[in-house]
Length: 302
Image 1 (tube, rainbow, N blue to C red):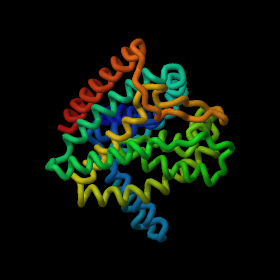
Image 2: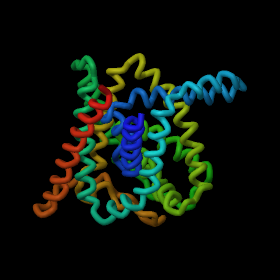
Image 3: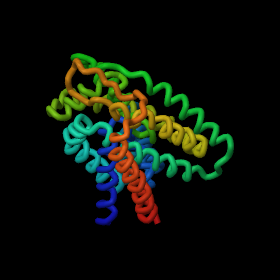
Image 4: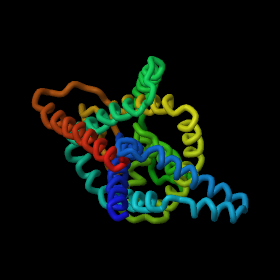
């Protein structure tokens, strides 16, 4: 029991660390370590419990919440919260100081995740390959759009940001943090975490609960009925999202809490000769790390 709880804490910490980074998804980590489908199943059960409560069905609500796998969920949630609370400022500093090197590391992580995801498709066909390529191309171009930070966001904007970000967080590929970047809310949310602005964080959390309840039900149904097709689309998401992590000209962009700073992290350039070594070396490290985590995840499963 204790080793299982410890493993879940580590998985949660890795997921939380990934979700802080624009461009890396906690869903990607869940996929790598072999808990993705169970995570979606548990989240969907939570959505059903909330639905029963909204209808006034207290017995149904109680039956559902007592059926949760708390040994799976609680350590995972604790690990995520520890990572978000402890690493937000550290990662922010590194993204500001070493954007190209950090982008190279994350590029390697996601590139390895693409291979892991493709391997999880049970019956790979030409159709699945076509879905991967179409989704990847669409995501690549969509990620070229971005926004500057929103100044003094209203409560409704915090709620909407939480709902959108949580949907991305449970999808392998694009991260919730990058969704926040695209809509101009990354600075406000990461600033609320650093400043312990619990009112703003509560609004983001409320939006996340609503978004997660609605989206997880739909995603769970898709996985149950069209698992290989959905996995192919997720691989395409991860492949297309590599645009965000291309290290040059400035990695995942300048991440700052300054309200007047515009994010510019989807430009694509070739590196100068003296710029290539660090990001490439860290990219290889990230790729090998994913392979190692995936192998360890398989051992935990067995």
